[in-house]
Image (cartoon, rainbow, N blue to C red):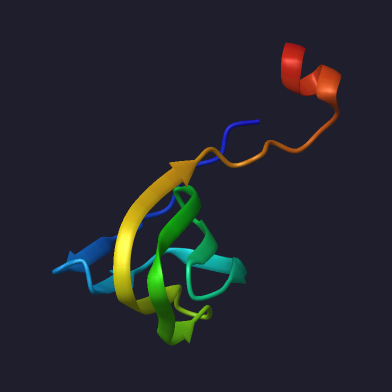
Amino acid sequence: MAEQAGNSDLILENREKLSLSGVEDVSGFDENLIVLTTSQGELTIRGEQLHIDRIDLDVGQLEVRGRIQELSYGEPLRSGSLWSRLFG
């Protein structure tokens, strides 16, 4: 089952302000870690004193402030049984 990925923009200003579009969900957050689901997969933001300034999931917008040290994307989990994912 192939999905068409939606658009997602990421703007990082001076490693202190991050603006994102294409945000679908926030899985968890604290002052050192924010985990998001985006149209491009799971995004993990690591840093210090992270704070979500603005979030609007209806339009997929998110703004984060703090000391951003790392951004990393993971692949989204595919649905279905283990066998269908291995041999599908």
